[in-house]
Image (cartoon, rainbow, N blue to C red):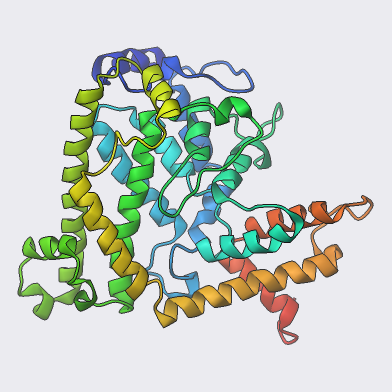
Length: 394
């Protein structure tokens, strides 16, 4: 039987010097005994998979709301895809795959219902009270405070490296959260966290094209201005587009991912050879002093091609009338729910809103925001029907 100490010894042999080794972790806020057969990052991954917020990702929007169809990606399927891509990158770069997987599985826990539309609606509403909503911050609060599964502490008591990876997750769509814990704000992320960031961006671009083509909100012609798209087409049988559109779509997405992955690994490996990091601590220190320098990423040429393709998606897909209609409807649902709860907070469950307590206006805003953010698309839609449709059974 392979024990935890056996796995840690194996990490010393197969992981690069710059990788984050399990035995070198900064530890947990609340001290716990080590597990006999699982490393600290394996335990973190398992705790995330078993938490309530992770299960709810199944019914939260990626681009298309759940009632649009079963094919489209949800936050859960997107999260699984990010974890898979990130582990592939990590394996090639000799990084800690368990740490990568833990960060990847947790990176979207804080998304409210209806994805970025829901986040924008909540942020706008609570700004009236001088508050902000940031889903990375929310993910951090979920794993440090809101999930209550252990008798000795709130949250999941994850390791410092996973917490920093969640809090500082950064992509085109994701802004790093802020935190009251200055020791984490000042902590640099490890390379494993940067791998999750770039895997998230890669998954977004490639898989939104898949969903866009399936929904027919975009067509191959819409993307022909993209040089990256054209290169992908050159790797696919040209007869497929006319004879088997479904197969054409699958092969194009596969080619897009493969091209990006090859460039990413080549560029990242070159940067790592140039940097000559001797430990994960050197990586953390570097990211503290040079937060905008790219170690794990795409070459300048491919980055520009990705940006151009992203711009086309923004114009042709995300601004499509069908997507905008869904986005607008999602924001109306969030606004309606918030207004009702502010006017009559007694409609909230008693475990959420204490009838006997005297809440300030800002406290009410925060309580209602937290409650709505915890909903799935489905539960938000159902609650809206109960509150606004007089013929709906309660």
